[in-house]
Image 1 (cartoon, rainbow, N blue to C red):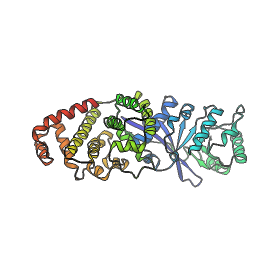
Image 2 (cartoon, one colour; image 1 turned 90 degrees about the vertical axis):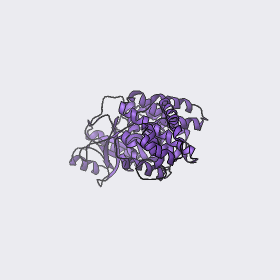
Image 3 (cartoon, helix red, strand yellow; image 1 turned 30 degrees about the horizontal axis):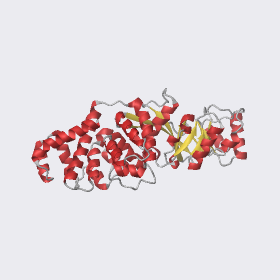
Image 4 (tube, one colour; image 1 turned 60 degrees about the vertical axis):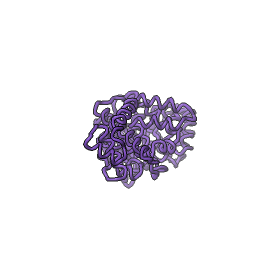
Length: 409
């Protein structure tokens, strides 16, 4: 399944890229499709942070993302690191004291806030309270007249100098020069660059498994071992969990050696929020095909086999062997080169080297698991002897792992 993100750069006065606006897209057509705004933002967050990767999209720069009233008011979205996004408040969001109280909370947490396509409304009498919490005001140069812009510009310059004005939909050099002269700090529009579309292949999710995990997370004292076992059965979730951790500046140096470690590192509260978000999205997008199903089956088979053999050989880090098997086919699942993927996974060097094809102490385990999945006896028997696995136990092991994978899928 391909996923898409539109990206348009935001420039400063020196015509340097300082941020991006991220836009929802569902194909290579460079326009907003017919979809409700809540769904578009949820999709955009998942595609940006979990499918493609926010580091790859934004190059470490802030991302402006549109938020509806509904999503702004939901505490379930208080999980993205504050320096990564600027929350854009859409122009149709009603300005109320409830909204301002919520923005005050977000601002206190550390988020930057922007008003999108802003125009002054004489019926709104609480702009002073609102502007105290706003960092950017985006003004549409294509559809607003000079008098409308001047009213906003004068109010901001005289009373709220902390707010940076952003001129959007700037389409000519004349508009750009005019915006600079009248005090605009940031600029965006076709004059600089049309939105680019970035695409990636996402891993279809097992929606039933998501709902099982949600049921486990309802308990504030969830059993971590049971939760780990459930997440390990869901390749898409395991991959996204690692991407989420890798996308965090606070956690990017940590090398993950098991899914359990990843859960503990992330924390149940943050995990719970992401699971709810993913389940909401997958309800509408759960479209698996036969190729993906076969690749996921093979990945899980290899994962469980590697773990099982590691346990039989008294390896204390048997969870790492599970991850080697699980991610050994991630390049085929995502249709991307392995060397581009491994940079986004915070796994140990040994795991990354093994799935990249380098020879490590884990390589025979992965080779054995691959051979067992195909019942490739020519390679399986010598590998079994190398790993001290009785030949007569190979078929029972095959059946046992097969049952586990069938249950997982």
